[in-house]
Image 1 (cartoon, rainbow, N blue to C red):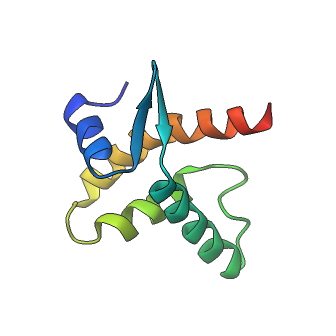
Image 2 (cartoon, helix red, strand yellow):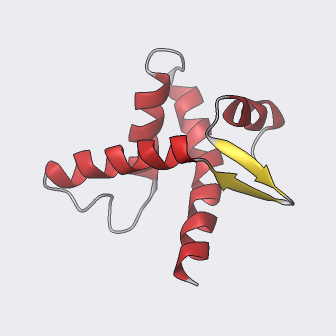
Image 3 (tube, rainbow, N blue to C red):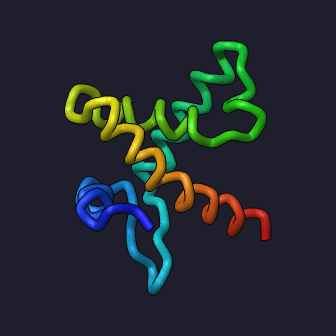
Length: 94
């Protein structure tokens, strides 16, 4: 489970929402992920590293937070967003 303060920030910033007992991504987050994935694919990648979501998540967070977060905070946010994004993808497959 991500740090509560970090989770509160992600919710306040409109990237994550609470749906019952689950954390869900928002349209704002989904759009940032789409842009990040597009940039990776356009650059000759596959949208990640063999299915590793950390790279597009990191690119999306850097885009959204730019100079607001340092490298350590971005890394923590990637760790917080990874299980939320994985759960969303899993929901989409069923």
